[in-house]
View: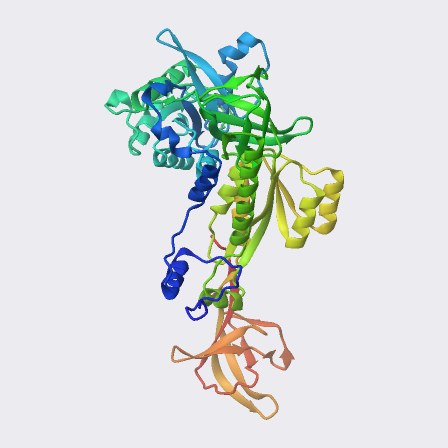
Length: 571
Ligand code: GDP
């Protein structure tokens, strides 16, 4: 049936929505496409879990919860520094005298009008992480802090960050950073941002701007206040703490001693030690929970980030987690999801192309793929990197395919895979050991190391451009006028010429111009002589004898124009 519809597809190949609709009409079936989310909802319902029940909750069950904040902005504008400064002034950490560790999120307590209030920070700066999370359905962020360096102003990633936050309908608080730098111009930043709809309160808008120095800690307390005030004014942040916990995975990795370690952010309900949980395709029982100060916790309520031990595998950043009724249910949900994911990956790998497209592209062998293996230090970074890479578009001719991804060091297995599929390995904050590096070297597998996402993106983009077939442009190299024609029975006609400009070289391509019009185009200077000698080239102002091989249709006054094809660099 598909073949008749002009589609060539094998029995296991995926089709697009339109094709399904047409196919449905042909065979008289009513086709309804079910989104992956709906499918998952149905799966959960089989285990008596209803994700929509939050909407049905009684108002009185809802209690205020702290805002969750993501720091975004252009590279080098001070996001990391700001997160560090805020963490260092974290009151709880000082009280505990403990050493804070990076778990992907942390909470601070701020005094607002005499009342202690908490704020949760996601510790992965940058909008890549923000969008990667959103792409997986994890809408974690309540308020975004947009960091703009006062000595640099609005930059491309500043604009991107604004777009992402606005698309997610997340209110923005602007931190105008680096005001300690001489020449910093916070007013200019205010002016620039007005164009993007961020109008400072002092100018009658509704966005709070705070001038800070992340380096010196100036006004960071005011910034935190602004976050709370913005949240209070624009959002109604409440959740029911008295239910099974739900939330999202912020970060996850494999720890040598402790197994899978995942930082989750509880969004509603309360997570307890001993709960059976599912996060994406991984499951387990909460064996222990730790806060960012390494202290054990028994329970974690809404907006609390907590490190969870006890999952049987490493979930992906952005994976939603929930508590199941028991271990068995948790396992079954995870296994069903794994099966769905495998099917989806298979479908993705076989890219759907229409018959026409496919034939054409294949015939011209136009499809070129850059295969990539990504290894990183955390699932968050791997995810964010993959996401950003998939967004690179250079041309229709070349594409990127991430054939394998994972958390941890680069292994022999990765190199083997890269060898087979001719892939490049990207190590994000990870390295191979000696043997693996040697193996890669022997096999000729390229391993590239990065610690900044955008550097990786720049590099890949550049190499993709390199994969494009070179473009050529014609460059005219000389003109020679035919002044005499010698007829030789052995060689055919020989043109006696005067080189008017440039340089004639033997073997170059040429054409005949007669009265300024190109008559024949694909000729070649097959022999070139000066007097009796064969020469390689003759310069402007000299006479020469040119033979054009089997081509003899030349007349006095014709111009022989030579040209070369030169490769042009792609922009
Ligand atoms: P990110 O790329 O946005 O995370 O930027 P970083 O936090 O890594 O900061 C980039 C550079 O700017 C680092 O060298 C910081 O020390 C410096 N920096 C950050 N905040 C300030 C500030 O308030 N004042 C000054 N003078 N330098 C800062």
